[in-house]
Image 1: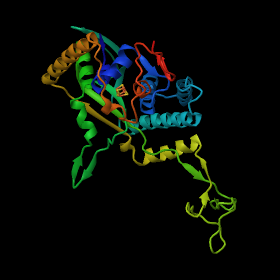
Image 2: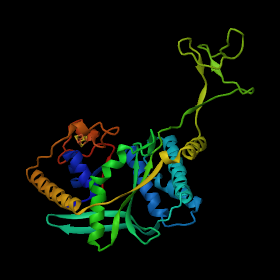
Image 3: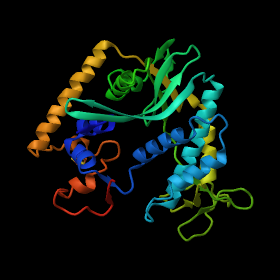
Length: 342
Ligand code: SF4
């Protein structure tokens, strides 16, 4: 049995999710947005993380390449917005940590590991091995989230969002810290480098006439006028007055996002180091043993349960298209929109 931080997360979320994704190795043709942007974020760090002088043309090329294999039915405008989001955010991330005195040196990036334990091969990829000015080393994990990450002050007290609290307990940093120790690396802890995804979105832009006034039309398609005979500047759905708009261009979205990041960068970027104790490593050992035994039992009895509470979490599960119609992937054909992973 192969285990990794993501397969453990799948198993804990829903046994069927683990079975479909990690045993049958099925995946959607187009991953949901949260998954796609998270993968893209990692890929940018993997490709450009070690580069001191970033070549922006190469970054654009890389993004074009990453988004080139989306199927024809995928909304092109959405892909273009998403590429701009990744471009702007990656540049802003580099700039933010340069300005905030990033003293960490990336010694190695994307370090794969495979460690045999009784009953399983534990596999994974450490995002980076980093070193601070004093020569203290850490494992770095890049993470993207939709949750609030910025620490704020209230009544003079520093309020840490719940987001950061979860990592002391989380299995992924613990697993990577453990893996690093198996290599014989002398590391002090795991640094989480987090990007909070934008909460703002591309919006429609009002169409203006030659005088710079908004164009609002009435139900007959004529310019809606005020009582004073001037062009209306506000829409009124009930009266059938509709403001004319066009979708934002990707460049305009890039400007809007850049402005927002520059205004409040700590909402977008954050770092924290997680330290683990001997007790934590004992906990990991216990968790791995439990998971291995449970999966062996479920697999032997073909008793994969469904955690239906998870189906519509985070937008929706990637496998609703299989579970909701009740398909049995050990017998039925792969439905449209899914592929067999290599
Ligand atoms: S759709 Fe629901 S039951 Fe099916 S794998 Fe996802 S979470 Fe599990």
